[in-house]
Length: 82
Image (cartoon, rainbow, N blue to C red; front, side, top):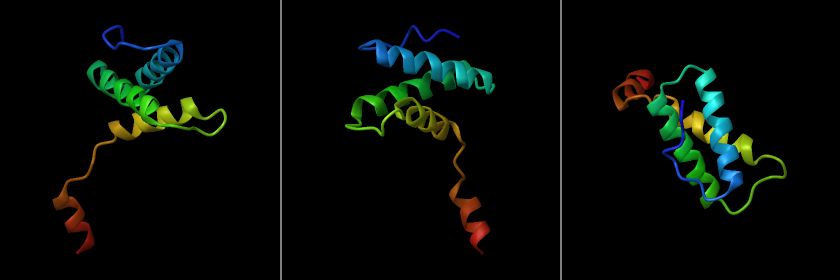
């Protein structure tokens, strides 16, 4: 899987993007979904002012994985509450 289509501003972003792509590829996600998730994680990294010490990659990976979880429809939510 190539993430070359995503532009990184620095080495930290490249590291995050490369390793998140590897993790998601091992989980069996499609290449297009991986690209979207990596872009989402990089945007999260760029827009977050502070991270806990040593948790930058973990938080970005969690955001990428959370994005790929299919959301439930409103109908399914209503049916469950009734």
